[in-house]
Length: 141
Image (tube, rainbow, N blue to C red; front, side):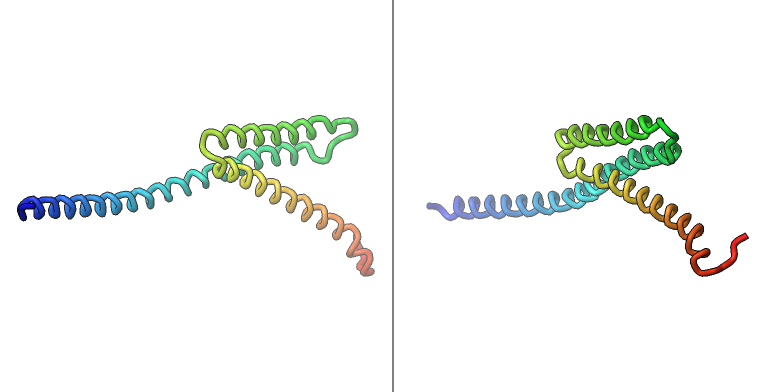
């Protein structure tokens, strides 16, 4: 085999290797951008869940406490919101991947958790105002 062919083949292999390394470096840069975009997308999914949950919680808070015989609006809002999130979870899971759909549910759950803590805290504060002071012998006016 002539040396010119061998040198040419070696030069071609070196060029192909260098091209491969450059392509790999470009892909690494794209992956960082994709990671940022993916995290931003997941954050937006969680924000969407927070918005749906907050809207549900606000509607339920305005109807609380229920008047006698008017529990149906509260039940309808709660069940409707849950069904909406379940349908969105299914659609987003198929379109964008299960991870994005899961972050929607996480945002929705956080809104409900905050709501539950607010209701429990308010109820506890009212209870303590009514009962704790009297049990310690402090006169109330």
